[in-house]
Length: 364
Image (tube, rainbow, N blue to C red):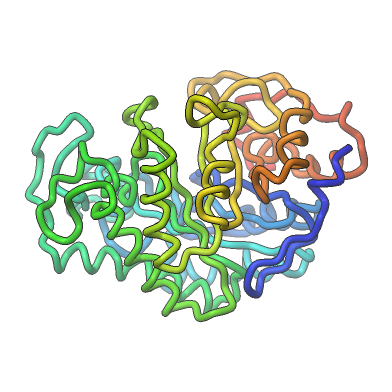
């Protein structure tokens, strides 16, 4: 019944034994931005329990205004990178594969917060999600350094031995702010229509490719929705989505991680395809689906203390069997239960539990 989830997958130099990915989930267990023993053990447990590819929690680039929480891990500096080296080695020692999610929060980060409270907050245009001007737009050279900060992190990931990298371009953070016309009013090469607004991410992809070489896959996570506007859509039609994603195909992206709040919801009228299904159909690239897999409610409820009932995997497996997408990212279910994948693999579906929101505050 679950056989399609346990087929091998290969992309560039990455080979994994199944189609299950650990979704990136912010944990805030890295004081001063340094992942420690507890973080290494957290990822190691999942690598040892049949997770095909681990995508780490978001880990921030070296722009000082990239982060709003000093307990979020950094991906720069001697101590944080030493911590990530340990994480990578422990995952490999357990037989797993791992990719850092490279992140910049942009205007989600408020001044006075994060690892460098006095730093300026980066943005496309100094605009908030309501269109209010609160800062000067960065110069073109500043934007180019934002691009370079992702490439510097990608180079470090390759040097440390990570198996892939993921660029966080979703959920209303910096890369997604460049996509979104509400927050990107630039009139230079990084602004304009949707295709032009995609240039920032395209340059990150192409510069990261130079940094990591030919063997390491580059994953782009993107979403239509924003945490500032759940009903937002960058692309209103399949044609617009095809043109938008084509920018990243041309830049050299390998895998598209298509974030939805609920994976079973169709993306456009007239078709049952979800976002990952459309992305694969339009680009031919492998895609990752995500969004409340194995649970009845979406992840936003977890942040306000809501649990979620375990849900059957039938809908997921039907779509997987049809080849709608290639990989499946598991979030809260795997956060709570390190052995979730093993239980599915062994047919122990009756052991999959409801999600307790209290798990968000623990490292199992």
